[in-house]
Amino acid sequence: MRELLYFITRRSYVLLFLLLQGIALHLVVRYNNHQRAIFRSSVDRMSNYLKKRSSGVADYFHLRQSNQELHEENALLRSTDARATPIRQGVIDTSSAVPYKYIAATLLQTSSSLSQNYLIMDQGSRSGVRPGDGVISRDGVLGIIAEVSPSYSRAISALHRDSRISAGFTHSDFYGYLEWEPYDPQSLVMYGIPKHAQVSVGDSVIVRNSLIFPDRHPIGVVKEVSVEAGSNFYELVIDVGDRFLRRGSVYIVQNQHRDELLRMDISTQQ
Amino acid sequence: MKGINTRHILGLAAVVCLQIFVFQNSHLRIGAISSLVIFVYPITLITLPLTVQRNTVLIIGFAIGLLIDIWYQTPGIHTSALVLMLFVRPYCLQYILDERELRINMTTEKFTLTVPTFLTYGSILYIVHSTCYFILDQFGLMKPGILVLRVLLSALLSLLFALVYRLIFLSR
Image (cartoon, rainbow over all chains, first blue to last red; front, top):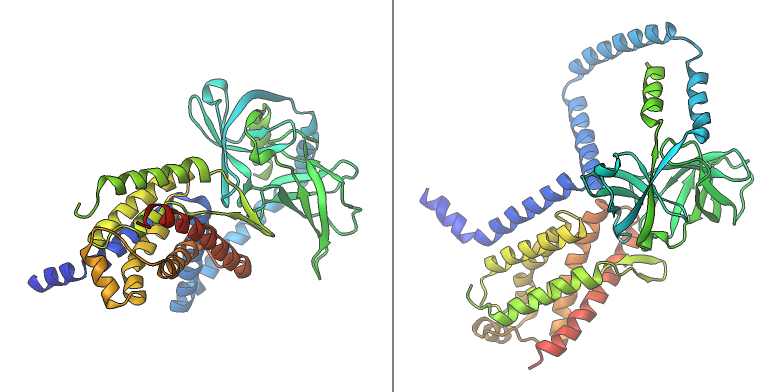
């Protein structure tokens, strides 16, 4: 016991450092969404690897169980109405006609220098704001509401590693999705447009097939067009201007048919 | 807390306010490397006199890091980088100072380094801090070239600030 106390006293500096660093790293993986997702996937990968290595017999039984589940799922799919897919597409296609409720708000705080940026607005649940609503400005799309308090709301900015927005062009029916690659606050990257589509610098990019944002709401203009070697899809850099660097008036848009559409979507999947 | 006086506390409060209210929304970009961060807050901690117990410095650093993280909405990232930087500090001083300089600093209530020694000392600590910060921020080693440039440029800008601080407040 005395030796333990002597060790702790003698090594107090290193032990204190390890304790404080441990708390800090716990905070990093516990309260930062991006870091938590990577940490979890790494832990999952590692545990899966260890499981695979340690027990071939258990894997064998697990495979049998998976096989059984696939059989059951297959039977369920065979008994499902074959028209389910066209109906679901129909729901998405009519989203342009869906009425949107606009709630005027002021953007109180915005960041753009981090890898996970957020927006804070002065309207909350008292004004009817709900998680999942969109945030737009006159110039374009800004983000999606993640948390709501009675008087304020917090949105995941489009300048967030995990954000993904459905987008297309004014002049064609092709559509893809937008992501952000840190740390340029004036550019988003668009993926999913096949390379046989005609795209050129200066084309306008708008919202397409979104349940959150109104169809055809502006996003930006194409700044760079490239195709990675061996890929069949464009990688387009979209100029979104400096709207993420400015505070001021924004709208929280609420698709009033969203719950209904989501319920329809779920029931269609079932 | 032995060795810490009102001047240190005021200096600490001033640089924390500067970091939060002035540098939080500054978007620095050099060439293709954007979102550079100037770390202002470590300077008062790395220039605390060596008469202050190193455990105390670690705890103060932890508290300051948490405060900055709350404002930046980056729980743990600044804290971790700052705690690591302060942990390395005594070893760094042992490495770069000769016995006489070390003895002078251990016995006086003032942190005194010549400008060239201060630049070496600051470079090492700011590189440690920036490396830890940016690796934790992106939580990996993706795009290592850009990561290294971001670390070096942020450390350089922070060191320039630290040098100005040293010349103004610690030269006499």
